[in-house]
Length: 596
Ligand code: GTP
Ligand code: MG
Image 1 (cartoon, rainbow, N blue to C red):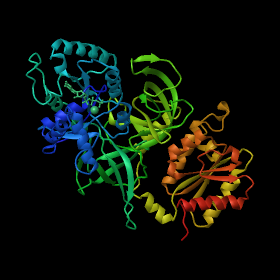
Image 2 (image 1 turned 180 degrees about the vertical axis):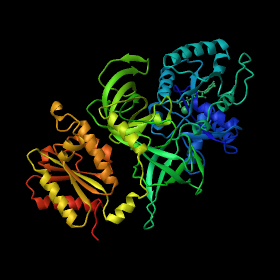
Image 3 (image 1 turned 90 degrees about the vertical axis):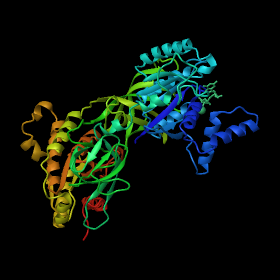
């Protein structure tokens, strides 16, 4: 039996808590005697009974560590277990939803029959759809207040359907109910003979549950990588929660955005070791047949299944709840699964006022606005489009440590490095792997492969530093090679017409340089390269091709020209010996070389 998580939304006082209370009561999900106890208490205080009191009482017990969670209640039917998320107020609950506290798979939207459609009836529906929740059931509640009149029901249904059509939402069903009286909640109503459809419970049981998730393509965002503690055991456990799909022992997996591939050796979950198969919804730890250097935030995918997108620009539908407006020229943190990346608002395509869904034109996104935007990210990440894969197609935006918005990804957009990135993925996929592992080589050579890239101002002779460093490491017994730019330009790159472009390095030069470096690194060598005034973009490209963990970026010059993510900064007046000394210190600190 799988769980299904629901969120309940709607305008203030339209009866959300009452629907939940009644569902709990009618499915015998309440602690023994609880309902009677609260009813009695109300009577003694001459207060009318409210289901909201019941939920509050359960919440208090939870505070004492006994039963239920305020936002989350549980009930079950013969078909499955339900987790239902109450949504008090408006803005607050949305924050919970986007922060991932809820992975609601369906929503119940409550409308008061007497009051009709109100502002939040619309806004919530829109936000639900923006969150990518596509199963929506509309309850037209408090039918007792309108004499169970079918006309009232039909009118609201018609009006609301038209609105939903505008925002491309097709609800699963419209149900006339009275939560308080219990009409059509768990039992068919005797008061509305004109309605022959299902009750709320029957409708819920017909929704698609997580079972469908396990049939989707496999996705596991990498949460953590643990090393085995034993000496000489270089295995690593890759841990994460499986969002969709199924993983089997022996499956070939690809990690994105790096494109690294390996095969699943073992799988374990929280309770058992060595299981052969694991499904969506479970936390897992896996070991691989070949060790890879991957990082938290990568997305594990099974080879042959639908590939995710890898991009550093994306288009999204987003809603904004931040106190400060969303603006260009500010850096936000975007969280996609376990990945976190700096994001900038590149362009606003349009903004909707969610109260009346009018398009407004302005250059910033204010609190409660819904907008279609383009974001550019500091480095590429792996994700899906929400229409195919809702869970791995959503994100949250953080503004100064606070969740300020969330949304769904509608398009992956290209940037100037897209074609290079596609080639890297292809290369990783096709790479002929040696039987000798990275660590075996590291042990034999007593060094870890690294590319030391020395950049700096034009007039500084970086080659002198590079060659002296090569000599010193060589004398110490390291396997090291200095590769000059010219060695490539006049050899491997001779086919690129340098004179025509007037450039010593265009993207293709750089790409070939990095691919060549990649081969040296795979062989286990320490490679030294140098070039003038390498830009941030060029360093990015190098690190995408070589792998960030294997690139040491050195810059010689003055403080003002320094790029912000340089690994080693050397003042231009430092002596040759000082320069070499500093680089070696960093190599030791990062454990590329060690004293023995
Ligand atoms: P907020 O959490 O404040 O947004 O409200 P809510 O949507 O949770 O509404 P709640 O369930 O607290 O109900 C609001 C009021 O409507 C309460 O007084 C309920 O007793 C009443 N109510 C809810 N459902 C019905 C119904 O089916 N019929 C009648 N007559 N009253 C109802
Ligand atoms: Mg409530």
